[in-house]
Length: 367
Image: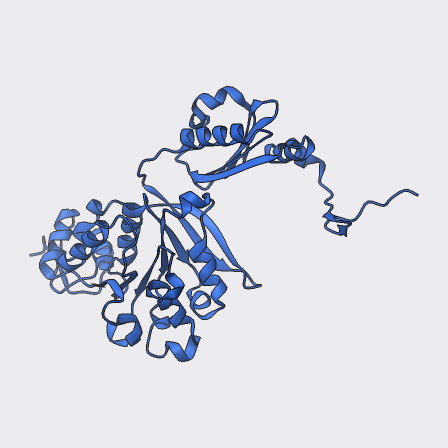
């Protein structure tokens, strides 16, 4: 009797059968996995790293063994490298990341080829684009990572935007080369005082040793199931275990002040306690994880557990620039406007571009 083919995704026997569309065999991803399963190739090594380009020049000498490639709407490029009859690599380039799969029947050859390809693609240099993992819980409350690369300025380009206390605090953070014992960073100040710009500069300075994780739904991260917190803390970003374990992680909760206030315990239960325990308690043992919280709330509203002595690596207040510093900033940026009261950074940018600001101002050329 003829056996029926199970429907797509249905269990049959010990495996799952999928009805694969014909076109999948014609693209590099489908070709690679068809090779792995069809021959089969017994050993696979997976690596992930940042990539500055998706030009074929990225491959260097490996261009000689390029077998097939495909670009998808300017967002993804897939490359097949045929090293030998039974040794093949798939390189996926997307959002500034390179994902490398190498498969073969010799474990030694697979490891050696994967390492050489990784070394070829890896620039090893600080760049203006910093890899950031954005996290969000889907409708079923499963945490999902989304990897992107963002433009980040050097601190030297921004330091004139801040007063001396912020500049000194940033220099102390820049001096770090690994995760310290105190792991909570608290930045507070009114909107428009430059907290986000400073954060981008910090990510660029730390990119050689620290991976940023930006939480887009802080209320779920803090107030939801603890599995969300652990998944973010342990996420390796596609790196192999040995490499991931050497790096630190910075979990970023932006504009999350309402979750850190004295009323937070009533709103989110034990979530705040778990988050703080990650920075200096048992939950954080063995995890090189720091937490950076930015807030527009005044420090006086923070829960005492957040600001207790010894917990914060650094606590910084971002405020308006003094009259003298603000006018110096305006002159340096080619504006003839003069302010007569302390002014936030956002309003200075507005004034320098011809917009209106809410502070007392006068035109230096006025009679």
